Image (cartoon, rainbow, N blue to C red; front, top):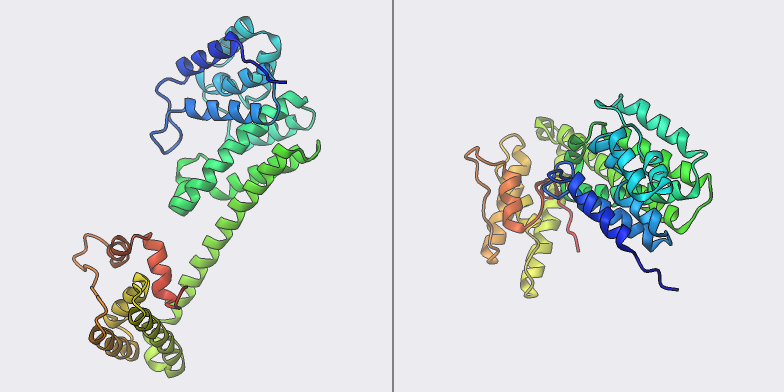
Length: 316
């Protein structure tokens, strides 16, 4: 049976727009009302009724738009059920807000005996937030956490604890989707940490000591040779070689510390040039890092290019 939304829903959407006017999502220029609209959509997608969808539109009104007086207005205009859900989805009505950790711990405790309607709206809110975190983390990485009052570790703790709190009432389709999204955020963060640890290890290993370590130099030199050969083979097949192969070669060719690697890379650059490989060097004028320059040339992030430089293994 199709559920028709009444004028009450339209009035709630108008109120949400008025209350959140001028507000934007953290670290972006996205109007904040887009979030409450998305949460209402998720509530409806997962079987919510009109009261629950209205509460989703207004779920941040008390916390971010005026506290108790706003809640009283919501109760007057939309009834006790909507107001009670909105109140239960707010982790504070105080200004300024209490400390982050205390608020989140109290909210998690509150979820242990929250009614189903509250859990539905709350889980929908957390799912949209988690989806946004995941998309933004893929785009900007660890810089994302600068937008929040909590650290990255605290944010991950909170979302994992939320999943567990919702799962304690049963694993619904909505909760399962939230769990998958949070797990993917955790996986992305773990991968980033591993890459950072590898970079540190490789930078430490590939310092001036390489000149005194022919075995290590030979191993990295072999990777450079493999990278050059892969680029040349692709060129001969009429394919465009990945930009990271070229940047790996040119960066090592300009290395001022590792004499052995510099010689190997420069020989490979000459060989690649003879094959018609379009090698260009990154700017060193100080306005941008070499990785930034290389990233612009090949349409990738600077971190991606840096990873390719320190791990110049051909990628398919």
